[in-house]
Image 1 (tube, one colour):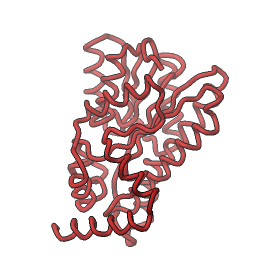
Image 2 (image 1 turned 90 degrees about the horizontal axis):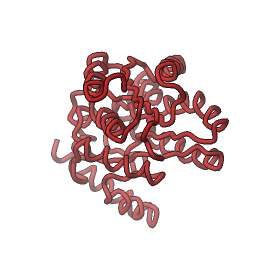
Image 3 (image 1 turned 90 degrees about the vertical axis):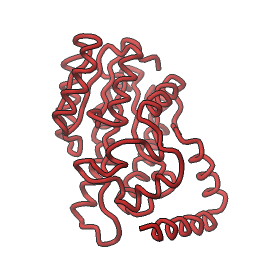
Image 4 (image 1 turned 180 degrees about the vertical axis):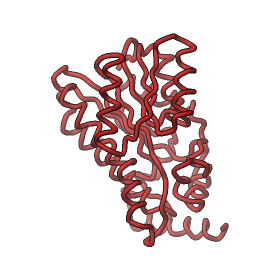
Length: 273
């Protein structure tokens, strides 16, 4: 997809990867960019940054995408401002919870934000895209969704589900004009990774330490450039860290050996704490 003169919505766009994506899509010529986040100050600042470059090209929406109503309000306001949405990027995500004693309410919140939000948005968007013959749904999952996440069961499970939903969406509607991409990075230099996000640090200190051991920590702008090129090429699986593909191939080739290796990594991380 060529993003010039298109309308793009990005959730979790107040900061981090989402903010970088919004800027990149804007630079690509999107005529309307919708900044969605629960953090009102960050929504306002990111929106102002884009409008300073091109007046009237962005709006901000404070939205809780963990509910069907929050997604409907976001999509209604985006379409009222700019018309039909061409690209919806379900990027918002949180990390919370650790082991088997994680409370049910934490599990529910993580699943709602990291997985169900994608489903709520797709329910509203896909029928219109099929009628128009085109539309693009992107989601941010994680390398944890292809592999796993040491230190956080809710994060690992919710991100696996996000990848599975993206795959299903592409298989089911790809021949009807709906393009789908799924972003699965490892470490990115954001407040989520570094443990200062309002809704909880990514996968706890254990999880963050594991991510930082596994590979390079990229800047959000680096990830956004990779994503933009993948959208142009309509690539399904977006891997900013090439080593994730190697890890996934090893997992598929010999799951028992891969699990044994992950246990050793867990022991290494535990020894550092």
